[in-house]
Length: 223
Image 1: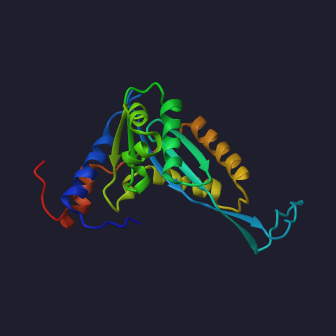
Image 2: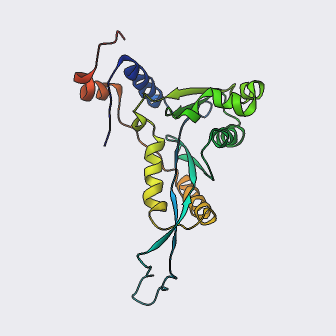
Image 3: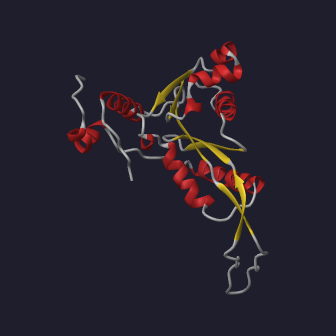
């Protein structure tokens, strides 16, 4: 369910800019990449499971052990059906910067310009790159990057949330006791979805936004 705040002029400008970006045709030279993160719990069994037998599935005790949390960074290029998922111990600004660095110098090293779609988490802004890398190194890393931010309280406009929802349903909806197991499972999930080139078909347009939300706009923009 969407949770939409005040539909101010700023909200509309950012929303329209993202919807225009999503409407562009796919481009290898200018990929559109949506990034978000998730912090799943690591949960283990309190007792050994009963193994699978004929006509009987594996059985586990209802009690469980909490093993803390970890972090998943998820980047998805919706129209190309390509995603990169990284398992990290934390989601501090240094971890986020390292993940973006990996994208820019690895999977998207040959792109001319890279459009990154992000929400407004405090670790997602340019200053974090300066803080972690220094201004000169940050300038060099980000010279091909254009940042695009969702309106505040509108992370539903970031398609990475859709991909994270699919990841949660298909891969994380069970007990995973430690980061090593999580890494193995996420790698397998990612490899299978990339091999199948599972795209995200975004259908919410500017016209649809005006039809559904127009009566709530605070003021009219001259566009």
